[in-house]
Image (cartoon, rainbow, N blue to C red; front, side, top):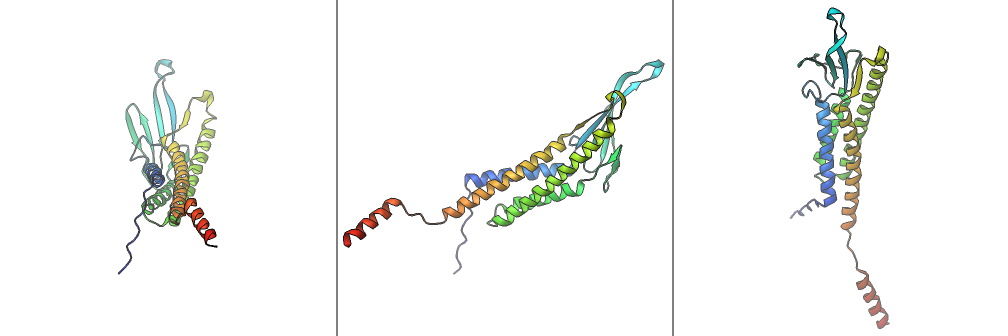
Length: 218
């Protein structure tokens, strides 16, 4: 007769770790999709004013937005948009954007960690969570470097006519990184609590009474 496997304890701390890890994976997954599938989840955005130069007028009548995602960049003007072909490390104005592989890998490892969190393979889960956090950190570092270069190139434009700013995907990557670290710490603490709870406890009152009985006999 085989022994019945001990069911996994769903303590409040473990449940919290599972929820945090799922949210981190979900954010990583959204960022790995990005443009052009999710058109509002860009990493960075550039706004270029379009002036009406007819009859000698330089009045700004419209704006051209260029949104940079993981897979492509999209240009928006007057309610119409067009996206570049998706490919390996696309090149967009004024510089290429390349972190798609890192974001995909981070999302994959976060998903593996989320699947393993329901098992008793705690060390493997923590290892996968750590890898996902490191890859997310690398992706975030690439995004920071690319945005800094983009901002530097546009700073040479006279009168700061062209504006640049970070997009939702940039901040989702940062939040995902924080959540992965928190999930790893929470799951580690939960594992230690469950490990200590498996040891039998000996109340001090029982131990004291047994010593009293032992001394009386002697």
